[in-house]
Length: 258
Ligand SMILES: NC(=O)c1ccc[n+]([C@@H]2O[C@H](COP(=O)([O-])OP(=O)(O)OC[C@H]3O[C@@H](n4cnc5c(N)ncnc54)[C@H](O)[C@@H]3O)[C@@H](O)[C@H]2O)c1
Image (cartoon, rainbow, N blue to C red; front, top):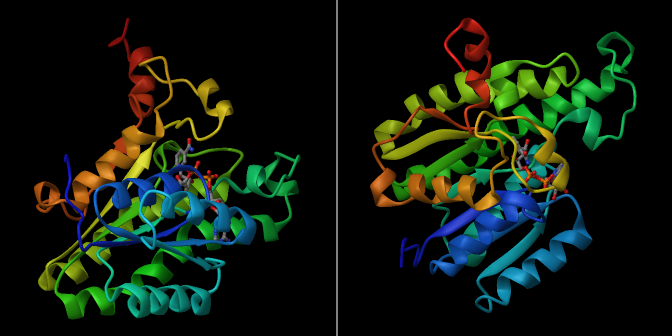
């Protein structure tokens, strides 16, 4: 086996679909257990069933709106009650506010402010909430790995999804570095994976990269598994862009490219 997660537990949000679901599947395939959180109860039930078909009883689902600190504490408590520990925290829930809330308007000043509240709450505050709720469990264990989820949009900026870019930037920089500093004395690491376009939906194939393609979800999730494995244990406080070079595309117009 490439990784050994026997006896290890992942707590992931946004686990009803995309990379959150895939990360739970992979941890279970490598012998571990998964606590799967999502706001969408129906999608979560079928995702949990899919993961449990790999190994019966390896996963539980907890309905959780990541905007609620209470819901997050409940998910943590369920993880400890059922599996007794949390080794990997992966707060995948997130997305660009205009797409997620189906807002057609693109002009920043014309989009209602509540849309940006949602973008900040789901993409930034929720990851801080998860860290605050789960770290005491990891501190007692004297072990654990937090893998925040950023985005190349947090590096590039965006004139449309302003809250998404702002939130992911905050996660990739201040939050990841601060939590890494706080957690290091307890043997806990904290890093951030910041993907470019990922084929969790077909539309992402249209987002340009120098490599001329979007990533397969496994190309992102595999690095999370590496960070959570003993081989990745000396990484902390880092935000790693996995973006096919998208964040350096502008260098081509600086006379350095072809
Ligand atoms: N797919 C990409 O190209 C890409 C690129 C860069 C970054 N990312 C980031 O990676 C993460 C996962 O992306 P994906 O494409 O796999 O996701 P996805 O869109 O497939 O899934 C997101 C999940 O989050 C859940 N969710 C939404 N609001 C929630 C809330 N308030 N509480 C709990 N759950 C909620 C949804 O129900 C859904 O199951 C996101 O944070 C995203 O911003 C994705």
